[in-house]
Image (cartoon, rainbow over all chains, first blue to last red; front, side):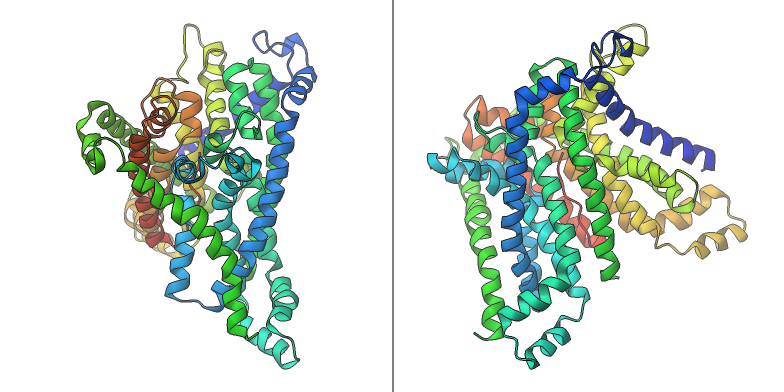
Length: 259
Length: 267
């Protein structure tokens, strides 16, 4: 294949991905998108979105932080245990907790609703959405931490600390966690990025009083004028793009260690 | 406390969470699929009800088309970006991987901006060019989020190919299409299978994009959703979910055994 053709395909693909995002940014700050940019630029639509959906933005941030805390508490010790005992059983555990990556969110949400839907107090609270987000993001935290721990000489480090009299808990907090930090950071950024953008599970788990950012987005796409939907998408981009870039940076940094 | 006990203790939170919120709900889902009027015959019923069968065929067809298109586009772009260093390469790569963090609903909106009633194509071209809500729009939406996933998998594999192989083929007089067919494609084969499986599984299960675009198109996730919410046919929704879950999990399992890595399904 000629180089020119390859370049053309690459540029076309990039344009396909980029053009609508630019359109959405422009539409979000244009007075009247149908008339075009000539109708003038405005921040009014952003203001409207803020009035309508600020609560859903804060709910998403809150859930993302809670999700981060839970995945840290569950994921980091688990990754340590799995890294300490590499073998078939650990592989099976990892495989099992990774199921939420392979099974569509819709199916997982149905499963949760089937089992816990009748417990109204739980069903109606934000923790129900949190459970879905933890299910989906936990495998990323575990894998990220585990791959860093598998690459360092954990045994020698721990033996060193043990000879100096450190007990298992002390070794975990003073030796394992500091060494795993690049993996924890990459995992944490992945968890927050994915939680803020999660829709497939959340759409089934949310209640009319608990709408997360992506649920609000779906709502605005269905019922608001294009300018408001675009302004809301613009706000989402402003939140998610820096997170994505930070996540890619942290993951590349963590991968350097595993090489 | 001994070291062994501490390590075992480290797994307790994970075990509790995975059992309560993953294992038990999945068992419940499978059981629920057999609790309808048809009992376990519901799976037989899926294959003999024209509406479900059409949905299945249509979902698989769209997913296959997306997989092929994403493989062609992303392999071309991926090889080009691995082989050439030029100014703006990093920017181009960022643009091509950006949609990784977009939820399916946002991808759907991107297609509306391109092919909706107020979309780019309808504004530029005379006449009525609205394709966002058709099966073609859905195809474009799935392609939108498949390109970055396939690209990353292909590039990771392409970087590992020894450039000397290609050089040797060229020195021996192989024209570019022979180098592609006899050297690059075989070297990339495991990555292509893995990336293809990822693209297929993601497209099969994509709910957000279908939710925004496919109000009039029967694809599996939309049918599951309407069976559950509108028809309250819980058993059928559960059975279709089980079927969908097995297919996507199977595809990704295949992908992993070929490449050893997974990228999250989503969209």
